[in-house]
Amino acid sequence: MLRYFEKLGNSLLNFEALAPHLFRLGIAIAFIIHGLNKFPLPPEALIEYFDLSPALASFVAISELSAGLILIFAIFIKEPYGSILTRLAGLTIIILMINIFAIAHQDWLINTKLFTSAQIFLIIGGVYFFIKGNKL
Image 1 (cartoon, rainbow, N blue to C red):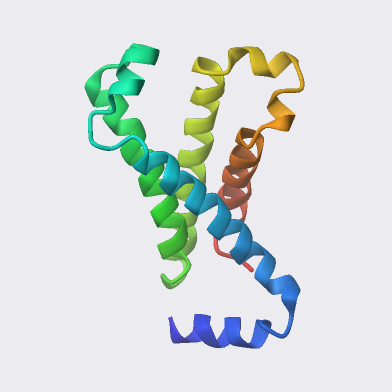
Image 2 (cartoon, one colour; image 1 turned 180 degrees about the horizontal axis):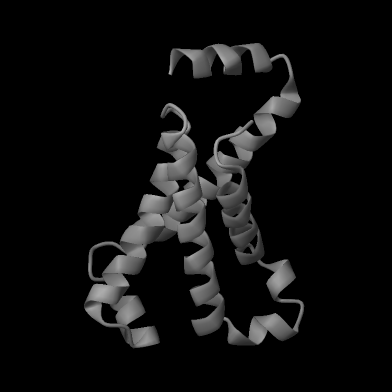
């Protein structure tokens, strides 16, 4: 972990190196907020609006919260485990977002709503971290 901070300290002079960290933080905070908004469990709004079971609705909330937290904490975990956790969080985000598009926003795939919403950036973030892992 000390080596990570040394590398980050050296890269602070290089603003380009901060971009992945800012992107990671933004995506992570978005998922943490989305997950926390569904607490206390089970999230009644998901159960009523989407007719989900209490277990599935709770799983969605925990998955959103976990993906955000893992994105933040995985950067401090030594390789290769940090990259594996980051890719796992990215895959979780991809799966969540595909299901959100399929269930909640089916009509978005045929018009501009998809590209004028934050959801497209969340799935792009998931793909980015699934591919990139912790590599700067």
